[in-house]
Amino acid sequence: MMTENKVQDALLELFKDPQPIEWRLTKSMAWQLMSAIQLACRHPGFKGSVRDTTESMARHLQDALCANDNDLRQLAEMGWHQQFDDVQGEKPQPHLSDEEINFLHWALGFAHGRALDSGDQAKVHYIREHVDSIRNKLNYLGPPRQ
Image 1 (cartoon, rainbow, N blue to C red):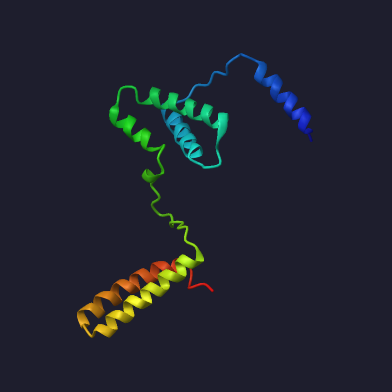
Image 2 (cartoon, rainbow, N blue to C red):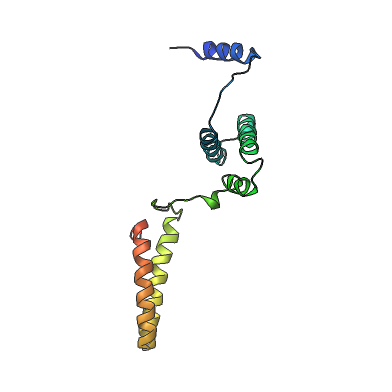
């Protein structure tokens, strides 16, 4: 196993070599590489000069791939922004605290109780239907927590 000093020495020697690496990619491979880099660059822990250099490389791929097509350019640009992710078939990963989950369970019970107290059967039916639907989704996160 290499020691940390040997690793650093090997990397310094490698980085001194100005000879570029030539690599031929199909457009499909370039698009996939660009997409993977976009995802990596959006990770909150990926910071600093390595991230900046990596994004620059992906931006060059994006420019080359989309030079003559504004629709493709817009599509490629969407990859830099999480709100455009396609997560079909994946369960969402909500970030709710135990306190928030408990509050939502309480609020659903409160809404249901108020509807029952009103005596308005249409309101009771409407609230019950929606409370049950929301409660089912909320139970995906777990039951009320202590």
